[in-house]
Length: 360
Image (tube, rainbow, N blue to C red; front, side, top):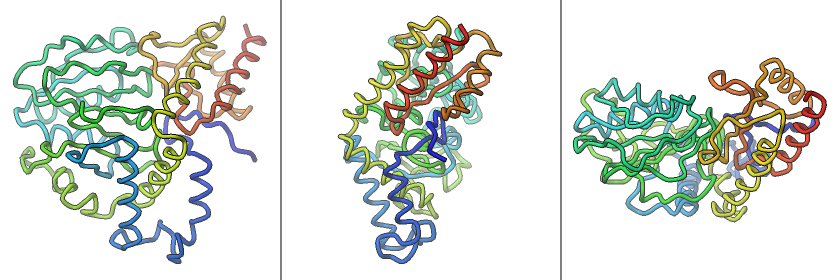
């Protein structure tokens, strides 16, 4: 069977070049006589893999020296708790609610202190990013938290919030490495890698060094203290070795593709093809306000649930898989991360036009 176009929100498709390289090295990584899957994380060979992955990521994102890069386990969902555990000195923080994941992080923070809702787009099913130019931030807040790209709802911050000098913490899981960002604008920026960077099993956190201290909330597990991880270069315990190895290959692939400026251009081109079609379609329509549209996740509907289901079924049969939307939005969602080729989006749009002609 030939490979399908996988529009899954995550785990998502990986670059074919990376998969082929990993396949070639599966039984014998660079003459070591073993697979990376079975290699000790304390070995010299693995140490070189994780160090090179970090170096390439620093190059790609232009990460300053006063930021630590941590390769962690537990997904973004465990990191939701690590943020207050490590940063809530005054037991108070501001959260901007733009979807399911921001909401879950907010609920988690409430366990540890006072989480304040600074703004929300829940009134319109999270279909836009609220105005964050003058938020009710108070002096006693430890940080301001956002989810920068909302996978389920297909929205993305185009301008970062004015945090009035407070630390900005951002979950970038679904827009990780899709375009350049200025790391210095964040105190903490992190993401699960299973959408745009690698296979599931790792969270990469980029944290300003002055925020990594021994002063965590009482009861914080040793493993969830950023200082534990930073002091041990992400090797305090066995890390997600194979996932980090594949991420390292994706970083090399991104460099070969021209870096993050080139990826942004590539992603804008892909998204434009799909959004232009949706804007002119009589059957399909996008669910997001144009000013807040994500380049990575594109939700759309026909307005008829039976027709939506028919479309998903026929698309799957034609090799366009995982297009079913999240239950809170319904309809369809195409996740078009870095590894999705332009050809995949063009073919999807051709298929949609054909479906429209037959079902309008």
